[in-house]
Image (cartoon, rainbow, N blue to C red; front, side):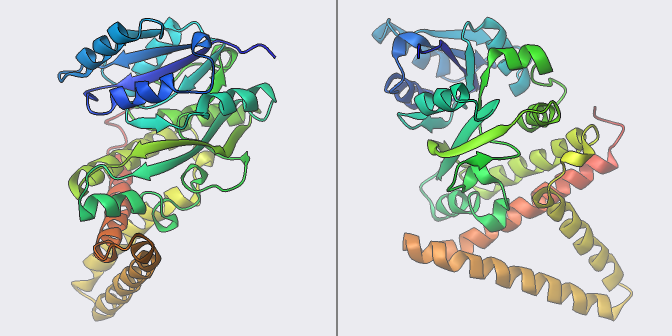
Length: 333
């Protein structure tokens, strides 16, 4: 079977530390280099990202790499600009801080050609964004079932259908049929596209043999901002597709709302204070129990504290972002 031209599209902003690693990984793919192009949508980076890319182009003239401007500086706009500029029959999305395994493109194309799904993706292996005890803990927490629930792209061991995947590979025809990424969503644009895909009768296929490394946030404050944004924009998407809500997405806002209600009631009602203590105590015990095996496996005692801190930050930030979006229903599209 003839290999189709694959366009790898990459939204990018200030990624001078990782963009070279990603380009190295793409050059080492088992998929033929002459059947691949890379289109980077740069949101007007202010660091050395463009210089790194320019240096790469000079040293490897046989590698098709192009940069398109993303003046809107939002991910969906960058993705759409890259798709419209690209020439490939297959569109494969990656992030600028991801490192695909050598067989990533080959296996993705194979699954698409075999008709496994209209969007094909794999499992991401989370690496620490910083070499600190909390950075290592965040990397484990963002792949832990207590942190991400049934998000298969974090832990799947068997190939099969999924509700979403990280990144994704698509035929160009799909975008012409169901539309491009929604530029009114600053975050969750991939899940929204996948929702439209499923509603059109398509299948999202995950294969754990398709693997990539992804670098997590390096500290709790950046993790909190990330998950607050996730929750905030998830509600905006759910206004359009309420049936797409998954239990893993509903629990954090319910938990945060419950804690807030108990805090308020505890001012006037002693039983509420007892109940609040029981809820928080049980929650912390569950998080501590979930940290024991990863801490032992990684021989890192700091994870006994770091993993519960990171998971709690994820839950509370996601839930708070969701509730804040709900309270500001008319202020953001």
